[in-house]
Image 1 (cartoon, rainbow over the protein chains, first blue to last red):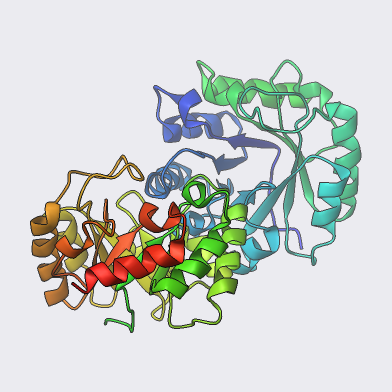
Image 2: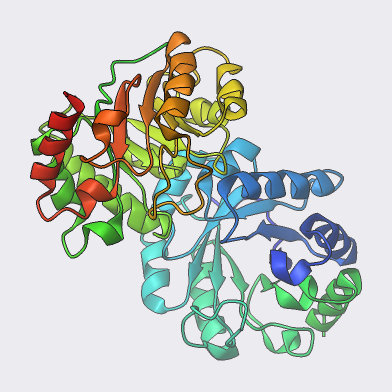
Length: 214
Length: 214
């Protein structure tokens, strides 16, 4: 069951890259520029700080309820905050456990970087997972532990399988406005540094949307 | 509402200190030696690894259902595993949120190191918190970010207030068999390295119980 989810331009936050601006300030600008989905990711924050960050981002997203907020990894934080969903990687809680904790109405995303990882997602009962993040497209300094680069052709192949199964497929890893137009066959792209580290996050998002339209 | 909880000798696990033995192996020996409650703590493990560790410890505790298993910090992991409770520090999710997620039958513990922190716990609705960990009694290398040492007299004063409110009070921080008899006025003591790093964890637990009886 695929829920209504526009993942055209999916921002994953990085607290350090946003600094000295706050994450919520960058998110607000990015959404004004065309970001359609947001994931709060901060692997080093305590759960209490992550909860506060999630709530602060929820506050700036309140005027745009069509922009869903995912929490990376921390299902408990998402439950307390009432976030729209959770995104898990291969080291996080299994997707079926996340779905069981969050209930049927939440959004569940899973990172996949190979046919085997996608196979595992596709073997789950329908409705367990809504979205797969496919990557890394290219290597990226913001996630040095990510697997080997898939390149656009590898992403396209995995995305085709995921989309055939009714999942939303987004590409992630090393995507910037300069190469966004090379990433095709997906429902959307995820960016971290191209928006979080931009001098003007709204303009960066606008540029990405423009390049994706080419 | 205080649940049945014997916290006389409360073991907090440390994966590195247990190595090369597995944490479950050390827990099994420690319980045989007299440990009455266990908390799985591993701040560096991924949630998936922490879930696996929690389940492995649950398996060795299955024959001793009177020994409760707490998970440190990770409420989501505790929910998935069906652990008996969660212990949170001052940087973790707030106790009232933990209670709401876990429901009325779980055990909730909170770390407190000052009158102000205990005040905050005592201000919560009755039944929110079952147990307070009071410390550090002495400074300890296993938790270098812990606050100032309370010394036994400081622990006694905080424990008296907590126990008057119906909470179980345990002392933590730098407690070993050589100084355990100095810690009084509490329902129990928590140990990490004295058991996890012991050549013979069962014997270490027995020695601690013996010293506590003096």
